Amino acid sequence: MCGIVGVVNKSKKASEDLMFGLKQMEYRGYDSAGVVFSKNFNTYKSIGSLINLEKACLHNEDTIGIAHTRWATHGSVNLTNTHPIKIGNFAIVHNGIIEDTDKIIKEINYKPQTQTDTEILLAYFVFLRKEHSLEDSLQIIDQKIKGSYAALILEFSSDQIIWLKKGFSPIVISETEFGYTVASDMEGVKNPIKTYEINSNGYGIISNSFVSDFQTFKKNLIIKGEFSEKTTKENLFHEKTKSHNTWLEEEILEQIKIFENEKSLNLKKDFSVYHNVKLIGCGSSFFAAEIGAYWLEEENILASASIASEWNISDTPTFDHQLTIFISQSGFTADTVSALLKAKKYSKTLALVNKKNSPISNNSDQVVLLNAGTEKSVASTKSFSSQIIKLFQIIKGTLPKNIEEKVKNIFKIDVEKIVDNILKHREIFILGKNKMSLVAKEGMLKITEITYLNVFAYPAGELKHGYIAKITEETISIILAPEDPVLLQKTLSSAQEIISRDGKILLIASENYIKKDLFIKTDPMNYDEATFCYTILLQRIAFKLAEKLNRPIDKPRNLAKSVTVE
Ligand code: M6R
Image (cartoon, rainbow, N blue to C red; front, side, top):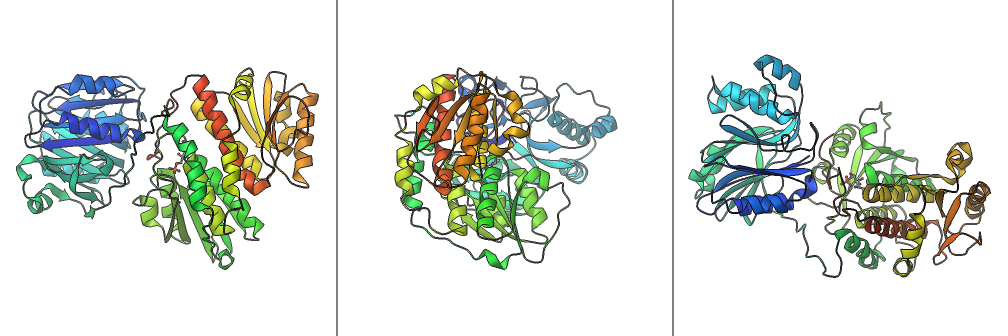
């Protein structure tokens, strides 16, 4: 993943624009970050938060520089592997993956100083430049280097930045009041006047000698590559409400508004024309896909869900009338993009995405926008709810009656003491039946990614087939038990099996059927209503747990908001 940004200004110093770009693109990774400026080739690097990097480099007066925010793929998180990476008079920042690095290393007889594939790309460029012109060198790289990447190269004291792009790693080039900015995302450009997105493999330069003439810029600076004007800068970043310290808390709360806005919308589609519906996503979006498959099968439509990265490598049976639904908050998830490209060959495609202008929305036959608004915290909360809202609306029609009231009441539940109690246990289990087993999985992912605790989720009926071996008095099992004539009793039987083995129970239901241990009382609700409401309750529990453990809630370790590598 990673975010890259390069700035060529005529007179204004570049550091502010570079730092702006890095901050806006932290969703692409935040393991470490770095900047290099052209004139004196000064490099600044930091691990984690951008504050120190900003302090160190803001005073730099240079008008040209490149910068990077990293999500480590090759090599551990340390300053040596942090970009920019330099060889002689050249520095590089890079997003994506270079394949066959061993072959390149052999070919050019190079001794790497870092563990990164990035260094090998630069080493190859430096090697080529000894014998070839800039354009020829870039052309050879374009033809020979395999992978999916976007990179910027800066030469010491140069007034231009070289860019290279292959595959899905995005690059936009914007004209600004002060010069040009090249970045992974338009969000990373401060005050763009006009932006061009590079739509194909390609390479070129941005230089301040073309600042006043964009036509010349287009002719001369995109040496190879197709591009199109990008007009919509989505307003990804809203002001943080003062009363909340984290985006996550704010985004969980925003769901009240989302349910109010969505409650009477009916987007029902006719799925009976399809012989088979496949739903595909990653992470939370995959759990949304699984819930969607349940709802479709309730409507007598043959449906199943797959994890994108698995489905991509599987033999896929094809049907005459097939619909494949792609679910993604960002619309940029590389595994899901690949799945879409595979499915397009034989299936109609429908995307459920939050971002209008994204590879997934742009490549699908039909698009349903989630309308969740910007989601900044790495953990999906309101976007997950919006995904299941949209699935419900297209499969069943309007949301369950009074759902917004029931959602509001979920926020009245005090989870503070419950969370203290959960923390006394070594392991957390979440279980339920039918869609509750999927709500459990989503709850498990939420707790895992923001607290790092040991959490397991499984369908209640599976307890006796193996999981029960783990139950002791040190485990707490969260039992999701909404109203249902058949499922409730079966769920409670599983709870009894746990109690018989001294395991602790936290029951979530409208009545304390078990009459002991911990209990969260909700409004009476059926399985569909609970799919929405219990999800939010588990999000609130996950948040409180993370807060008590003092975790970096919005940016959990090792993660990134948008996973743009396969
Ligand atoms: O942008 P997408 O919905 O395609 O992202 C998919 C997953 O990476 C995402 O849901 C991830 O699992 C979240 N961090 C979960 O909270």
